[in-house]
Image (cartoon, rainbow, N blue to C red; front, side, top):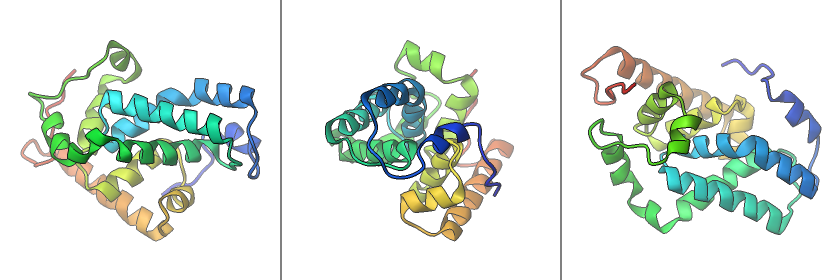
Length: 190
């Protein structure tokens, strides 16, 4: 796995250690991160409405508590994911995930969603939400530009476990893309 510096490195460099964010910094963070935070939750298996609500809940928690954070992007993803897990509608999510990803039943619920997610991203999301939870979580964090060490810290696991989950997820996704008969294959909708 390549842990090179990503395009968002300047944002990370701004936050060198735990500190409280100003209202302007939170507003800037909301402007730059809300869409990717929503996409992160979609990749985890949330519906469009659940993802937006949970992302907004995470920002509300950041404003309400004003915690000292060293990595605001990671903090937001962790809190948004926990908010999504606590949602009452999430209790039936495992059964609904398979149903929602069926090519005949899956529908993207918002015009904004169609603009924010390319057809390729929607296709990847359909494949990702069929992965086992640990593989899906590792891949969603990875797709958001986090390194193996950062993912391990946020998921409270070892870097080796993250690498193993990423490897297994990649293999499953490769099989899904290569084989139209794979149980993970989703008919590509363009």
